[in-house]
Amino acid sequence: MPEKKVVAIREILRRLRRVMWAFLRSKVGGKAWLLLAALLVFMLAINGMNVLNSYVGRDFFSAIERRDSAGFIRHAWRYVGVFAASTVVAVFFRFCEERLGLLWREWQTKRVVRGYLNQHIYLHIKETGSITNPDQRMTEDIRALTSTSLSFMLMILNGTFTAISFSGVLWSISPKLFAVAVLYAATGSALTILLGRPLIRLNYQQSDREADFRSELIYVHQKAEGLAFTHDEARMKERLGARIDQLVLNFRKIVAVNRNLNFFTGGYNYMIQLIPVLFVAPMFIAGGVEFGVIGQSTMAFATLVGAFSLIITQFQSISSYASVVTRLSELMDASENAAIRNSRSCLDCQMNADRLVYSKLCLRASDTDERLLLRDLDATFEAKRNVLIIGPNPAAKTALFHATAGLHEAGSGSIQRPPPEKLAFVLEQPYLPPGSLRELLTPPGAPAVADHEIMALIDDLGLDVTGSRDRDFDTPRRWDDELSLTDGQFLAIARALLTKPDFIFLDHLDAALDGDEFRRVREVIARRGVAAIVFGNGKSSDSGYDAVLELAADGTWSWRETAVTPAGGEGAA
Image 1 (cartoon, rainbow, N blue to C red):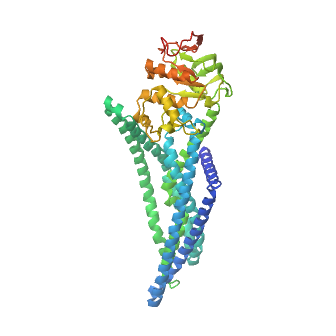
Image 2: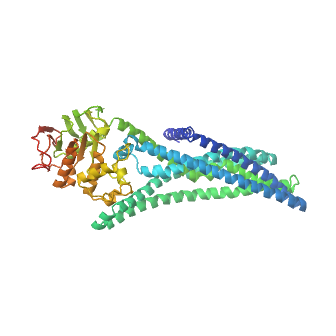
Image 3: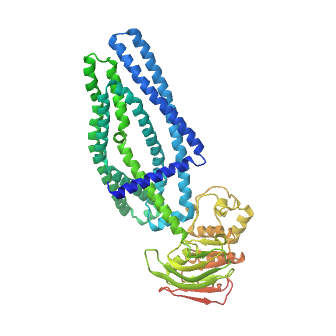
């Protein structure tokens, strides 16, 4: 294996150990340790029962061979007792394993989701496209990681205990048979790795193919109305068909590798039943051992080889598990890179000012695109002063909007701005998460908004949304499905104003609202003493603004003061 792959595997194992150790040291770690201790106790009990069962089985079949009726009945009851006790222990072992796996999955999922939502990692991952299908990695991959990691750990521990327990049994029967068992398992493991190695790459690819197909189906569901009205089903069928072809082609490769692997493992498993008989039967024929030893040797050989053959019996699971660990490692890498990106995304920001000051601000398209969108902007936005930003350079306006929010890092210069809670941003496509109207309008981390505050703002904006007339503010709703774009914009503005900002940034709302609606919005903002920074579509009048900032196509800019007229006066947007 090349050195690069060795390093990657070591890094994956290091991270896996780090995650497991963090889980065991977490707030739920005490419960996890108790469940682990119970699993070890039950595992030792199961192995003890299996060893006892081998001797009970030996005596049982020897009694049959001797035609000993009393011994047959006595050993049959011992058989039943061992089976009953083994069943009880196995059930409790499985119960503890599932509870520990669920506890780990709950902790791990919450930890990853919290990290994903911190520091705008979700946004940076989307912008860079460094990770495909992060949703699948946080659901299916975490589920597979926790359950499979625990299963493999327990299998390795159980295999170790089993090997120790049955090595003595098999050695006492025939040292030569013990050596054959070890050699047989080692040879089989090596050949299994050789034949099944492509499965790791193919399983990784299959996870992506399945997720891509599911994403296309989700897109159809989300855009069902637009798809129906444009009669674009034929092209969508082609896209879905291509996704199906990709996942089927990759799965065919997996099936082909599994076929070759099963040819080997099938014969390998059948020979396990025959090899001990070939060694012990001549000893019985020669009178060296009792008849029951044949059955005991078969059981001991199969159990010992199984303990040494985890790679063979679990190779398909191991290959899927390796792809899961790799995908989650990639998500962790992307999250770390996104956190670094977020730490520098605010261009020399100082967040303790009472106004907004851009100093020598230059903005590029992205880290990989050196196009200069804005050059050496020097401008100051004072509180309670309205500014209109226009120009034939939509990319520059978008970059400035994002940079002001601390979400654009490609550039240089500095931005002095008030603390985040003093700034509010309303996007051209409003963000309206599902929930009750009160939940939607309540600022993050603030007490619930009172009824009279909601009604005052709704009346101020002339907004009529579901539940507002009946003062039904606590029924959960999916606002994206219930509101028009215009009503959604009004609701987003109400939400922003309830944060009591000093500045509110409006992204092309003059394109989403008509003149009267936009005028009403600006009047409400002005009455609340909030400075409106409007990123316009180029058709807005500068009436009612204190200044106009124009961004030219070549990255230059111009600033001019205006003769302010009231926002609702003649010529307002």
